[in-house]
Amino acid sequence: MRLDEPEAAAVEQPSSWAFEPGSVGDWLSRLTHEDGLFEYTQLGLWGVCALLGVAMVVRLRALRDRVFGAWLALVSGLIVAREADAHVYLNPETLGELGVRYRIDWWLSGETSVGLRAVWALVFVVLGAALFVPAWWVSPRHKTLLLGRDRAWWCFFASGLLIGLGWLMDDILGRGQFVPPVYTQAMEESFELVAPTAFAAAMVMLLWVPLGVREARAAARREKKNTRSV
Picture 1: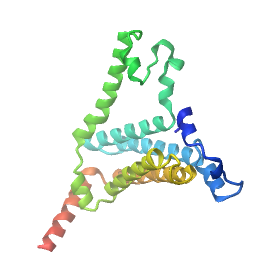
Picture 2: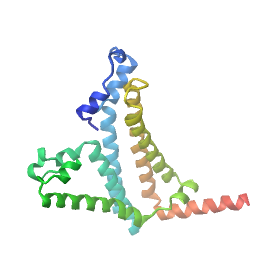
Picture 3: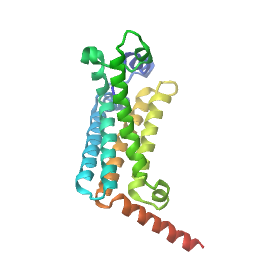
Picture 4: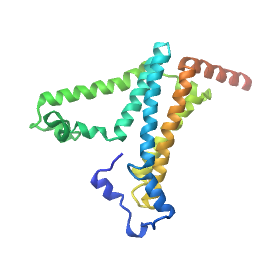
């Protein structure tokens, strides 16, 4: 994900944190820099996740599994778009008078066409519904799957946790207050690289053993464990 100029300035390293060519810090900086190897690998992995979601729609028979696959493909595709900064191509600089701004002053400005704002508001409402409604309709049994030691669900859980840790490294600890930003950036990019790997692993498992079967097996494991404990 590219940084805006103010954000980029905020993470510039002080001269005391400059690294000599060939040092570990210099190597990490090159490897995990924005638009570096890690960044493009992340994009590729999330693209693979989107394709796996499409494969779920095509391969699985139950409607619930197909809807879940389509939802996972949408989520993965939106992450790809966000990481590639695709949202900037919707700005007026690209679309001209039809472009959208994401600032509140654009939405409240009297200089902006009411019809244009209504159209973009409808687009975002539809997108929000596409994210919320399928997830609500599928309603996976999260507790049963996690406590029932379902491998796919634990991979999803790990992926979400790693994304959260990446955000922590970037937005909370990555401003250079405590350590050189190159190290927090290396941790951020590493977390965000493993996250789509775990996500893809979960989707591969769902391709071979669908959600409903996994829920039943997880419930059976929980019941068996509870019976033994009694």
